[in-house]
Image (cartoon, rainbow, N blue to C red):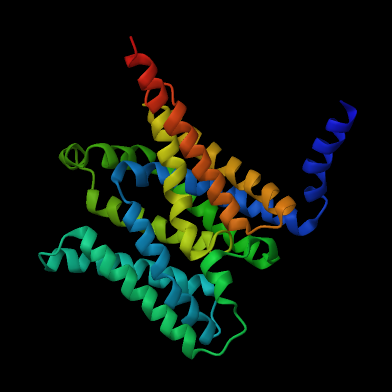
Length: 287
């Protein structure tokens, strides 16, 4: 028994004795919690593709910002918001459906980023942009991510009721005088900011998982939005912490471990959720 306790203690405490791991735990938990809250709105609106589009569209902004000696987050933010504006403009001015426009914009922006990266001489490892580098995050990047996450969190909490009504019933929201167009672009702007915050944690490729999976998991577990947000935030934070512990002891990619833990949480909810789990439903249907 004492041997098992020592192993558990070592498993938990040894990573926390490393300063770089403490920074990784802090930033990944913060990003995971904020993205978990945002993912509730993304799930209700069915904006998984939009999250994918914005996350890929920031790549050319990152490369151009480096080439011009500007903060990488600034370039990512400009192109993230620019992609949202481009999607809205093309959708309004053409007969092409929104999902098609999203696919066109995010692949076009991502391809532009790859071309610019191939023509820009730099010491930036493309893998760090695509898959994150949370274990090597600097103090400056930590503060930057903290600032972005706190801003996104404050806006979501201040406009919580309006955003909830916008996601559930936009027609009713318009009928009572809520500017749904403003909420639409505000939510997309927050999505862009969250994508910038996720750059250091899971990178461009896997950022969509941080913005979709916690909300989808919570959606299977409850019918109440308040509980859904709490469960999604808990899922985002817990998966970030567990993923980093697994990464440390298995010497694996941190972003991949975090997303795999999130996926495992979704699978468990899909199978065993009290009301909507498929195994629970089969039990209720059995004679």
